[in-house]
Image (cartoon, rainbow, N blue to C red; front, side, top):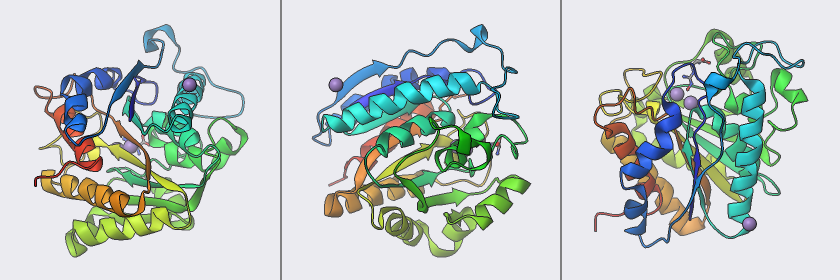
Length: 302
Ligand code: DIR
Ligand code: MN
Ligand code: MN
Ligand code: MN
């Protein structure tokens, strides 16, 4: 497997998330994965310019309101190439964010030349477009971008070529904007909220999510926003929302992904995003991120 750092903070207005890849590596990510028997190659970080050098209000002609869209385009293109290159070489791409805008690149790379599905573990829907976004932050838009919604339809770099709406599934939503809710409900994505987990349990929900994401495709991309977890477990995120997944629910969810992968070979790529060391407590959010990666890649108690 290949670790790819994507230290971008262009998609969110909280500085510090660019240090996420370092923090997750520092939390013994590679050793944890190697303990599963996998061999790890760390490809380092993509080159991402500092946000201080850029003007957040500069807009591209085709969009109304999306901050740092050109910078996001540049990061997305290089990340998509890096993910596709790993897959070309038979290596599993594990991408470390960065804020969730990097998922545009991960999805574009993972679905280049292949039909893929996506499971989105997140408090948020990330389904805003430049037109609906209340914040202008692209980390609230990557699903819509990858599916070519709104003015993203004009941006070829944003579209994930092999991703179709029917194979996109959310697990554990709990904070959605008004226009975003309308768009999700009108779309063909499948959305499981935290209430679904309360009612049915994490196991049933994740099994359903795996069915939806993997139906008729070559593989799935797992996009894991650390704010899916409850802030008591993962305080080091820019947009914490209480009422999130517990530590055990998160491990169970990713162990279920690994189980399905062992049986059907469906896991194609993964990313861990939104770890912000400045907001964290003694790196515990990065530590959970590293542990969860190991669970997804097959770590077992016995
Ligand atoms: C909000 C927050 N829906 C927005 N999104 C976040 O800015 O579009 N996504 N935090 O992870
Ligand atoms: Mn190469
Ligand atoms: Mn997100
Ligand atoms: Mn989120």
